[in-house]
Length: 285
Image (cartoon, rainbow, N blue to C red; front, side, top):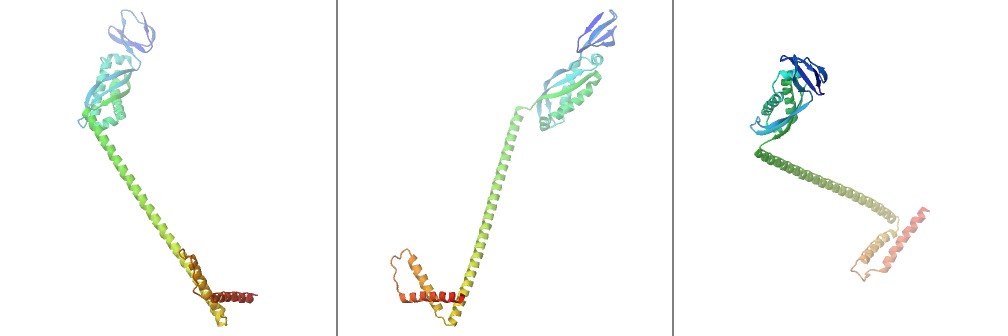
């Protein structure tokens, strides 16, 4: 008798109710009456929905969990005769191990370590289904839903944590701004002090140069007086007259200038200056 096995399937052959061989995809012949097709196994990868169930975590939180399982039959004979109702067996095995794995975790771990849960489930379930001729390729937890009161508490906790971080960041910003402002004021005070120091140094140096020049001029005049020249005295007198006149003329409230001095003395003093200059030029020549 001819038997056609479609691609993606394998048929088991039984002789008087006993498994004898497996037919691969394609055309095959069996002996009528003696042989008959036993189980028709789907060899393609399949997916099973794991129904939602309540799981108690390590910290006694109740969550609802569901997922999916991807598996493939790799040995049609074992899948046919080693287990009854293969898909039901895989589903129950997966649900049991979901409760075991999540029961060993806290709620926070179960919500944040989904990859760890998937990996642990795959290892356990695949090892348990190997004798059935099945390869479990993936197990994915689709959803972990805590009860509404826990969700509300987590939301409040998250809000409080964010407000705490915001307050800390705001305080850190204020602290940094105050530090920068104090450093700026410190730098400005230092620069201002250095500026005053430099100005005072330069003023002292200017006064020193002025005193030196004055001393040299006085020395020169004294020397001229010792040599018998009275024009030097006239020079100082004329210099004082000129300074006094300059101050009186530059006053804003003084519109009329009175001259309570002898013009002849001023002229004589100026003449003394010219005589000094003349003597100085004659000495140079």
